[in-house]
Structure formats: C-alpha cells, structure tokens
Image (cartoon, rainbow, N blue to C red; front, side, top):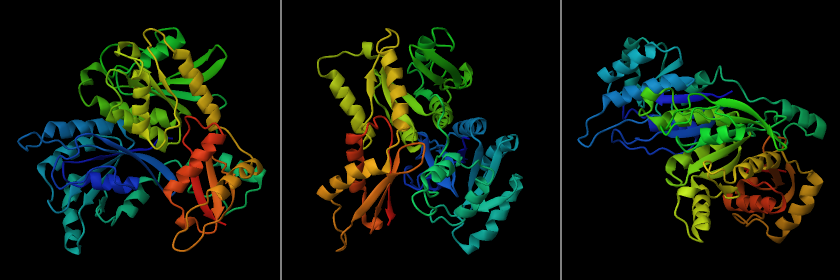
Length: 459
C-alpha cells in the first residue's frame, strides 16, 4: 500500500526542516527566507517498520517579496486531492495568521486524514501559545520543534498508526526454508519483503509529455490511452496486460493530471505524486526521458524515487529522431545521464523514437530481463567461493588501529538483491568499501538495472 504524506502550510513555517527529518537526510534547502522552496521535494522514509513517501510543498514569493497566496492555496488543494495524509504546519512564534485560517478552511472540507503541526515550540514559554490554534477547529495539536526533532516522534507515531506494514510472508518463508536464525541477517531494517509477482509489473514513468501513453498505445496496438501534445493528459494509472512475442507482463501507464483545466496548475506536482503510486506498485520502471529537453532535475527526482524503492529501472530516451546527431552524440548523452544518476550507474539506457517505432521491443525485453535480475538468488556457498578471495586480495582498510576481517556473506531473503557481510568491526566499514563490494558483485552476477543493498553485520 502506498502511504503519501504531504506537508502544507504558508512559507517559512519549517516545512522543509520537517521534510528533512522525516526522510532522515538534508534533501531540501532550509533557509529563514520565506519562499525558498519553489520546486517540490520528494522523499522516502520509514518509522516503526512502516514506510511512506513525503512531499514538501513549496512556498512562493515574487520578485518584490510579496507572497502569492493563490499559489499556496493551489498547492493545498493539490495535496488534499492526491495525498493520503496531510501535515498542516503553522508557526508558534508568529501565531495564528489570516493565511493559516484560509488554508484551514480548505482542509476542513477535506475527508483526508489531517494533523495540525505547530512548529518552533523550542521553549517552555511557547508551550501555552499552541492552544491558540484550537480556533482552527482541526482537532488534536502536535507541538514540535523540527529543527531539533522535539515532538516529531509522537507525531510520527500518530501518522503511521493506520499505515499498512510491509508484508513479511516471503521473509518468514525464507527463514523457514533456509533455516535463518532470528537475530541474524533477517532484521527489520531490511524493508520491502513483498512477494514477487508471477509476471512483472512494469510502470512507464517520467515527466509529462515524454511519450508515456504513446508508448503504451504502440505496445498494445490500440488507442487505449488519450494522447495529446498537452502535458498531463493521462488522468489515472492505467493497467494493461501485455502478452505478445513471448513477453508477458502487466503494463502501467502512469498518470499526468486530472483534467485539461488544471494542466497549467503544477503539472509536476501531479505527475510525481501519481508516479509515486505507480513506482511503489511496480517491479520495474521504464523511465522515459525527452531527448529534446535532456535529463532534467525532475527526471532525477523520479529516478531517485525508483532507486529508494528498490525497483528495477530502464532509462528510455524518447524522441531521439528529433536530436541533431554526430558519431559521438549517443555516447555523450548516455554518459551524461549515467553521471547524473551516479553512483548507481549499472543501468540500461535505450535511445528510441516511439513515433518511428525504433527499439520499442528492445525496451520491453530489457525491462523483463531487469525483472529477472531483480529476482536472482545466489547460494551462500557460491557467493562466498567468489567474494571471499576478492576480499582477501583487497581487504577493508584498517580503522583506529583495528583490522577488519569479513568472515562470510549471504544474500538476504528480500524481494530485491541485498547482501549481509559478517565481520568483526562492522561499524568501521565505510561507503567506499561498500561500493567496491557492490561493483564486484555486479561484475560477477548480472544485476543490471537493479539497485543492490549491502549491510555489514557483527559476526
């Protein structure tokens, strides 16, 4: 089940700070100047074993510094329409403002689950100030200080209370079959243990007007989806069964926006929120890029969502026939894309023209192969026979005078490729050596297009 959390509120109430804390990183720029967040930021996190996606909606300022109230309200409407949970943030230090009341009016008409979050309660003197916000009539108040995390634990407890936890049937069955002892590699910090589908779910994702629906129509041989030059024509994610030429999979055409009247209203917000749902319900994603526009920030946003959800990926560069080319254009473009998505570079990049039917079937054949790569299981004996000599030849660097010895490795029973390496001092193994081991695994085994996770455990 997809759990999408949208953070809304007027500018400079701390939305981006809370976003960073919910995602466990610093992906959004935080600045005291109102309106810094102009694009949306999309993140992924988990709390008590329950996963969620987070969207940080932006504030707006014009060149004179005046706030565009209509844009703030517009984003709230979009969040209400598309998210599962809404965090409405207000500022305890500034108190209740007319703009807060306007946003509250929209939220009161919503049937979505709502949490009123009063931020910047970083002093006992401000604790009593939060009661002012009861005037909004939005129920329980959650006072927090996003900058230091105070109160965010209680907020997350309430937010994820009704979220569906990842299924664990595959993990339990694997433990039974492989005799994995409790407390060894199969731990709660290995998310996403859903059962793989008998046939793959392949989602076609990307920016609006990249050619997603045209590709689906071409594969299905019929006008299943409406195609127009207007970005965001597709309303909902459409599932179709594809079974031709020896290939068998479910094809998902991700949605754009609701209707033409809203095409100009934050197309990217709609497209990414719908893409989140399609990504999380898929096994492999075909990420379509518009060759004329190049690989843009929004493409990287969607790619990051695919990688964080441990889904297979094929990058499809569409409209290649419209690009002026010489003998080096293809290699230059491919190298540029791989540099943007680094360090995960083991990805198939296919240049195509849906209009001219160029390399379409190569794209879906590759996607099916990536699905097979994602399901690949390596026996523990075979894995150790290969990887232990590699480690012996290039051992981990010593840290704080301690030599690190990796005893053995095994693949974990997750639906995506993940490996546990057991050693004497796992806390001293750093990211560069993890990348080294991942690259060695990719050299030996075909994990092209699939994110690989590596964990170090105490032996």
